[in-house]
Amino acid sequence: MTDIEIAKNVELEKIQCIAKKIGIDEENLELYGKYKAKISEQEYEKVIQKKDGKLVLVTAMSPTPLGEGKTTVSISIADALNKIGKKAILALREPSLGPVFGIKGGATGGGRAQVAPMEDINLHFTGDIHAITSANNLLSAIIDNHIFHGNSLQIEKVTWKRCIDLNDRQLRKVETGLSGEKNLVSRFDSFDITVASEIMAILCLSENLKDLRKNLGNIIIGYNKDKKPVYARDLKAEGSLTVLLKDAIKPNLVQTLEHTPCLIHVRPFANIAHGCNSIIATKLAMKLAEFTVTEAGFGADLGAEKFLDIKCRKAKIKPDVCVCVATIKALKYHGGVEKENILEPNIEALKAGFKNLEKHISNLRDVFGVDTIVALNKYSQDTKEEIECLKTMLESKGIELSVVEGWEKGGDGAIDIARKIEKLSSKQTQMNFAYELENSIEDKIRKVATKIYGAEDIEITEEASSKIKDIENLGFGKLPICIAKTQYSFSDNPKNLQNAEKFNIHVKDVQLKAGAGFIVVITGKIMTMPGLPKVPAAESIDIDENNEITGIF
Image (cartoon, rainbow, N blue to C red; front, top):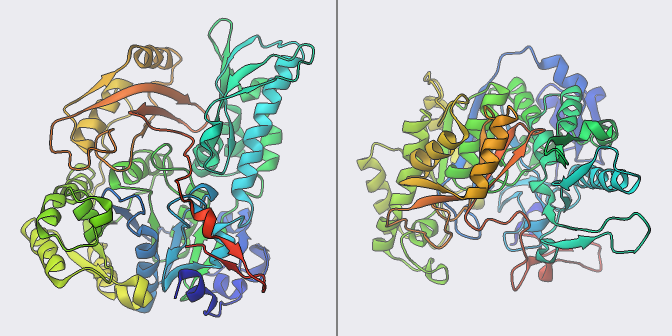
């Protein structure tokens, strides 16, 4: 059966029952039908003084184009923790329509390890991402309206982009203001995908509505004739933006197919943003349960690094255990096998690709200081010989492996790793950062590039170097960095899958995100607006004569 067919064959519990399991009163729920609800700020305020439960961060080795199943593994671990008698909650990211209709598909897990209702979650859900799109584009409209009506702030360069939550390469560069109206100033512009919008990052990193309003006001929308930044607050825009986001800031409560509570809340991309769900959802989950299972996007060099260096710093939290997801196909893919052949047995390629997994584990364990377990997300075509080979290589490095069969068996397929997580989480750990905020921007980039990616050094273009000096002169040099890089390689070259030769990281641009509170570092040929593949998933998605959605995976 397909994922959507499996999900439809499970009878869900009313969302009020799911809330009751974790001590949330119905009066603090805002219902979106029978199986979805938002949790009010009153609930967050009620539990904020409670002791934190354990935090489990699920990350992965460098992925193949179709991903390695972090969400599936996360869901099965949470279900398994509940099966062994531990009170567990999931804290996940919302799917973006771009990947849903593109190549990667949905983001609600798979098989018997899913969150539900999967069609709703993968599509419009409770409207959070649409609210962010509206807020982003309202700010664009306010900027251009200000310029049209005399430009009293003397805005000379607009850096704020419009956005849409779809993959559309045609919008990477556009020209606006072509109607010919008097006083209308045309200019070249571009769109980001919504999950790359600074407003998405701001919502994720804000602690409450007051904090959100302040951070929205701190957005730099451009620069005036004296090359000084112009802020959203200068346009008196932060109030209206906050109004559009007043519901989006509230976490969403849903359930797994095994009725484990799950908070799903917003989604910044991990290769061009910080890749984690909201601070509010994660901290709320940690107050409500013994174990919170969360994830960070793409490989550990992207999502996990940003989770630890950006989110943990801001939220003052740390994971007790990291789970690094690996697949046999990803090991072979990073061992030199073409993607169309990665399902065929190949022990030598698996051994070659082990270097990628080993580097991710070393980063998590040795650089950041977090105890790490490897979860092998098992596929039906994986052979016993391949699994034993991986187990032997991991044992030689002193690393535990747990074979997870969540797709086929749900929580029953993750009992072993749940017990290992329970045992490992009892140890006290001291988490480290890859850099200190007091380091210069260049030093921060260099430390992530050399420590986490394994680069020899960094190369910064003259333009990017000039921007770094400008950012430091403006007083923002102590912010954390958010490196935008390909997810397929430790290098900034997506085709350098094996990283067999020495490499440098090439910094071509630097962007100050004062509202979000970090500095984006653009490397290689990274795009902030993806395109659709030759055969997008959109071609197979439909609705039948019974109004049932089909084709989402």
